[in-house]
Length: 321
Image (cartoon, rainbow, N blue to C red):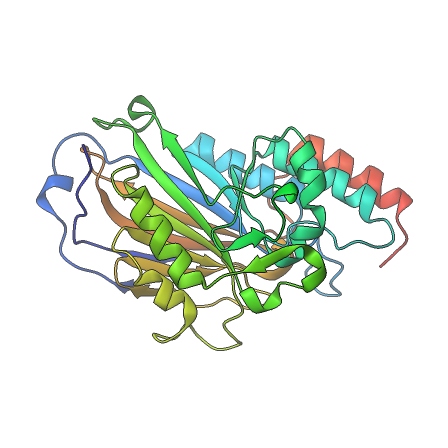
C-alpha cells in the first residue's frame, strides 16, 4: 500500500527552524518515530584525505566513515550514503592509485547510489567491470552506442519495516541528473533535458516507491537557491520528489529551500562538509519532517581506522600538493 504524504514539512538546519507547520496527530501518538538518514557528498574529485587547504583542512574518507558510523550507532537511524557525482580524481598523474582508494570508499562506506556525471563518464567502462555494492545511475545521460552499456535510470532502496519500527518497508527511489551541456562529444554519451527525464522516471516509479530523492550535478551559481532555478523546476516535476541534492563546486553552505514537497540542498566541494538529511517517520511510515545538517569534517571528528591507515600509506608516496 502506498504511504500517503503528510502535509507537514519541518525543515531544520543545525538547530535553526527555517519553516514549520503544526504537527500531525498521527505522528504524536504511538512509539517513538523512526528516522532514515541520507549522508551525501558531491564533487569530491578524489580527495581521499583532508583537503590541502592552508587553513582548516577538512574532509576525507576516514572522517566521513568515522562520523557516519558513530552517528548510526548513537541514533539508531537507518543510514544510507549517496554521492552526487564527480567522485573520482580526474585522469592524470597518480589518479590510478587515488581512484583505487576511492573505489574502496564505494565498497566500505558503502555508498549505496552514485550519480554518473559528465566527468565520471571516462570511468564508466571500468566501473561496469567492478563488483560494487554501489548502484550507479543516470536519468538523463544515455550512450550514443548501445555497446557502451547504459547506467540504470534510477535505483530503488528498500529499508525493512523491522529496521524502522513501521508497519511496512520504506522504499526510496533515487534519480540522477546532470547538466546536458557539460557532456563532451568524445564521452560517447548524450545529455537529455533533466526536467523531462525526471518527470518520466518519476511517473514510472509511481506505486513502486514511497518518495523520490534526486541527485543532481547542476551549477546553480554562487547565490542562494532560486525559485526559478533548474533544481526548483525539478522539484516541481512530481509531488513525490521530497529532496533535490545538488553538487556544489564552491566552498559555501547554501540555505535549504523548500519547493513543492521537496527540500533543495547542496553539498560542499571536495567533501569538506558531509551533508546529512534525516527524514522523520511516524509509526505508519509516513514522512513527517526533513532535518538537514552539514557536518564539517575537521580535526577532532572521529576517524575510521582502516581508511586512516590507507590515507597515510597513500600520502607517503604522493608528492605534496
